[in-house]
Length: 109
Image 1 (cartoon, rainbow, N blue to C red):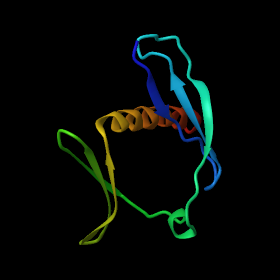
Image 2 (image 1 turned 135 degrees about the vertical axis):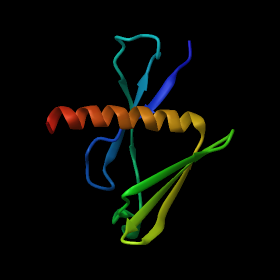
Image 3 (image 1 turned 90 degrees about the horizontal axis):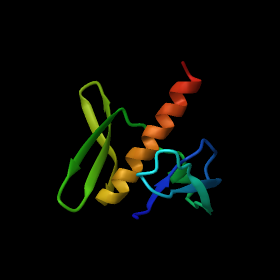
């Protein structure tokens, strides 16, 4: 039985604990995620400000996914951040995004 780890970010200010949940098996439809641990993420103040992106471009190779976050205004487009992920982590990110979108849509109709 394979185990799948999924990161879920709950809305919270920077430097707060983020829950890491673990699903027992993707085959069990009724299994609920259980809390594994809390982790504290440290970052410098400049990174906490974040960057604005209104375009994301996703590329992939056999070994990794690249997500380029761009800011496009008028005729100028600028790369503001690039994230490189393994296929396994990309799949976990996709699941976390799906879960958060469903939660957002449920509360913000």
